[in-house]
Length: 184
Image (cartoon, rainbow, N blue to C red; front, side, top):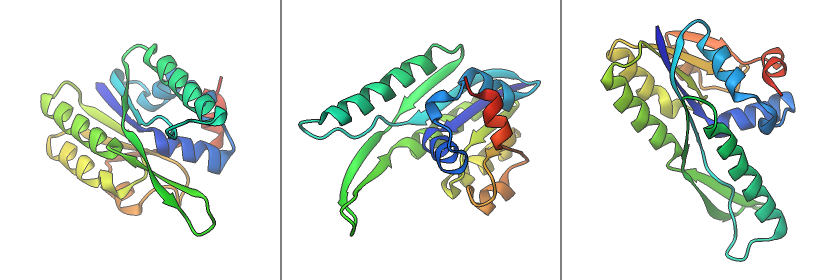
């Protein structure tokens, strides 16, 4: 069987950093998508994320963060059958503690549109979604309606919405052991 893989970059970044104290940049995505696909042939893997915010006159730290992320995206695009899709990061002011608030824009929508349009082509039998947000439930339901088996690739309990977990046909948990095996 063939599998398409859709990765919410923000989700895997938060998951690896907050739950396992592992830097997202150290994950070997070639190994990661192989672990996800198991015995299935990879049709293509899509990674959705956005470049970090840069102010009008970026600081040295902002430029370094931006450059590091851009290089990371370039490295991902060198992986066969791997595509990076970029949204935008919007600045939304500061919270009560003075910490800046940033919101990803277009990322979830791009993932939903890409998966929906590709599922309709029937070029694969399975789809894996690496995400935790309930916004992806319609994506899962649409793929199932089209006869595609849907895998949810998720972190530990509390890192994904229970209704998303319930909607998937199959599930695979990203554990610390998994991340340690796929880190370079």
